[in-house]
Amino acid sequence: MERKNLTVNIAGLRLSNPTMLASGILGLTAESLSRIVEGGAAAVVTKSVGLKPRDGYPNPTVVQVKCGLINAVGLPNPGINSFTDEIREAKALKVPIIVSVYGFSAEEYAEIAEKAVKAGADAIELNVSCPHVKKTGLEIGQNPKVLKEVVKKVKSTVDKPVFVKLSPNVTDIAEIAEEAVKAGADGLTAINTVKAMVIDVETAMPILSNKKGGLSGPAIKPIAVRCIYEIYERVKTPIIGCGGVENWRDALELILAGASAIQIGTAVATYGSNIFRRITSGIDSYLKKKGFKSVREIVGLSHRK
Ligand SMILES: Cc1cc2nc3c(=O)[nH]c(=O)nc-3n(C[C@H](O)[C@H](O)[C@H](O)COP(=O)(O)O)c2cc1C
Image 1 (tube, rainbow, N blue to C red):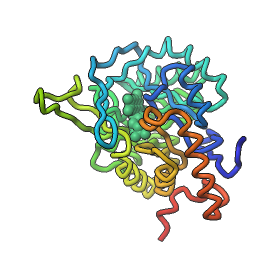
Image 2 (cartoon, rainbow, N blue to C red):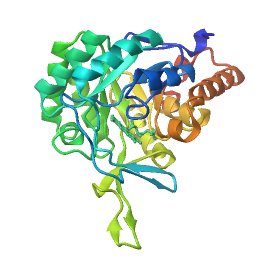
Image 3 (cartoon, rainbow, N blue to C red):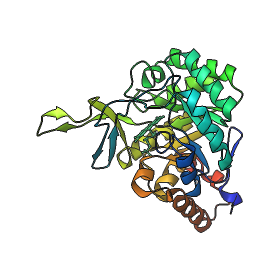
């Protein structure tokens, strides 16, 4: 049952609660997305999809560390042409479908986004922050000039909201956010994984086949909170918070820092898909206990003087 106090609106995308699935976790098939929706997610972001099919890196691609995961999966995906079937099927889920795209040029990003929207995507999330694939992701997102070209090209190609997913692996995330907004971004997703590495002392070698990867999970939540806080101070564009959310308290921290909605990735793999419902219910109880009428009232509340 939908509760009015929990609905949020991000650039015209209406969500029945502030939780959504982050890109890259169970986001490759309509069937896995349907389990996420059954678990209470108000929207889903697909795995990042490119123009051509891509195998990703050989194993090991994911390592568990004390407070999270380090992954360098290498953006494995079937390519947009076959992925459009999954997007069409996912439309039956009755929640907004946000398609994450990556490319090696502004034209590629736009071509993939156009195909995704034609297949039914309700919004596009630009992956300009993947830390472990060369010539895309972070290599685009840390260069304001190239980032602006990508955002402008996609915005002039599709008529759906365009969210830009930002990397914490930059000197000033608020500055990059501002550039994305100037180029037309309708929303900012913060954050992608934090560059990291793990070495096996027995073999004295890096564990991941790609050597370096991206850290996710509880370890990065304070980094996400700081990034969201800084972006909120700089721009008025809605922020979708992401990074280390495992429970309702974590979700609230990101919201109080300035996020209008939050995404969950690693914790879905750890705790299962019902996490969305549990977190929504925790937020609901908090709002009632504290006397707030709506979750919208507490977005960025920690900034008050
Ligand atoms: C195994 C794995 C695969 C991921 N793949 C993608 C991806 O394809 N595109 C993307 O934008 N982010 C990807 N991410 C990053 C997540 O969407 C998210 O930004 C990050 O993990 C932080 O959130 P979390 O701590 O809730 O996992 C991936 C993360 C993990 C752990």
